[in-house]
Length: 97
Image 1: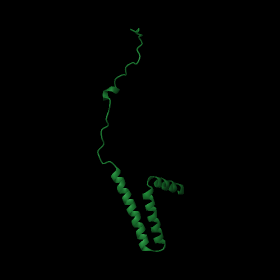
Image 2 (image 1 turned 180 degrees about the vertical axis):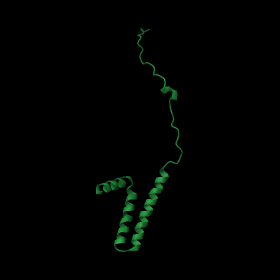
Image 3 (image 1 turned 45 degrees about the vertical axis):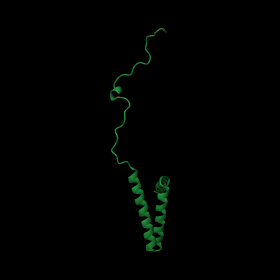
Image 4 (image 1 turned 180 degrees about the horizontal axis):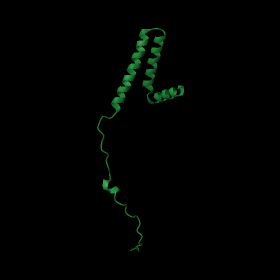
């Protein structure tokens, strides 16, 4: 479990270093506020984590294309795949002119 958690954290930091840093700072603030029974620091940490996660979710939603799927453009007609290919070399030898 510990190795899987480390792998997840490393991949998260590689993909989004700024968002991961802000979430970590907020989580540390919340942990310190919870241990020292400081409601303001705990609330600040939870707020920072929530805002960072909400901002990241909003960015992911904006980056996804909302258009309908485009029809792929084909360069050859659809019937060309059903026809046999022409011979590259003929078996008859023609003398040069």
